[in-house]
Length: 487
Image (tube, rainbow, N blue to C red; front, side, top):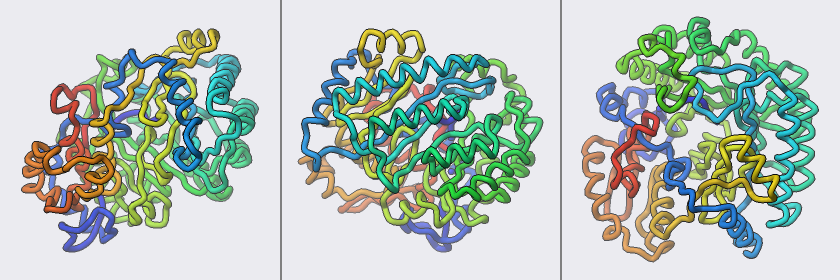
């Protein structure tokens, strides 16, 4: 789970082409600083629609159990593929920028108890959907999943594999805190079946690392990435954050150069969202040490140019990938999807989310587990799913989700496909939204004709703004302070 929050593609004379194109680095110059400033506003990331802030406590554990029963009752041809997310909330030390659900502790015995309750939660799921359901995607997030020692990780994976069938060729990923692993631990991760790693880097600058209480020498990360490649991991991701204390465009340039030298398969570039009133750890960051809005825009612009010049493809929003990485290939082929972890190459999935605070999706429902260990353990002690809130999607939610995900993932949609799938007349149903798109059309971000909507290459950098036009909840609630910046 990423720690902060939130851009680009490429080719000569490419202003009007599809975001699936993979032109050249001149595309970086299509994005003016003026546009970046204009869209330096808050908005959802659309890892789901409706977004998690719309979940309600009226959605209960019983509602979740019913959704699982409906999945089991459907035919195998109708059932969506299954994905798993496991949240490991523990960290040994506090990163001041962090907005994740985490528990800071050096008491590793806490993880022993946590694994026992994760097993109980899995048992509840198996009782509803049956043993041996096929899984094509697993993600371990946190916190720091590598807080677990090798034995505990082995125990966790063995428990999951006893209850689910892991499909060959699936994506099995884990978030890695470089401070918690060595080369021997990489051997363990490979042996357990993980094929994708995500390293939390944020910034290589020592002054920035000290300011956010996350000191990890660049040499350590370089050595781990080199060792991971030697062990055959299919994809290696690096997380970066711009807008942190002590950062400047010039200091971040140095980090960008190091990352290009490191050459990970994927790069996730997030804008730091300073919300100390919501996230207590951020109160340890002195506001005066944060870069100005103009400096952040410069960091973003320079990052885009640097990565594009290094042949990275702008996948969407905050993600870059090398041209032969599966994520870049999926973008070119129009096969991108989104889930609660971001962009994915896997087909649209039901997602079983395990662990404290985890968010999942089953059928036309979303759900979230209890956010504290006490509540999570108590529910499982009583034999209940630890669900504390969620949402059953309405017909309008489903229509808008299809529109928003088409824009976010493919960068285009055909009116006819929505008309046929949802038995509506798109131009009438979304008349107000089509009117609102005219401003984005004038800015060169979208093209709209009688058949559909196309996001331009320039517009792909601001695709969240395009999607926001179709968000009914934002139309009635303009309070966006809860969200990260859209670029």
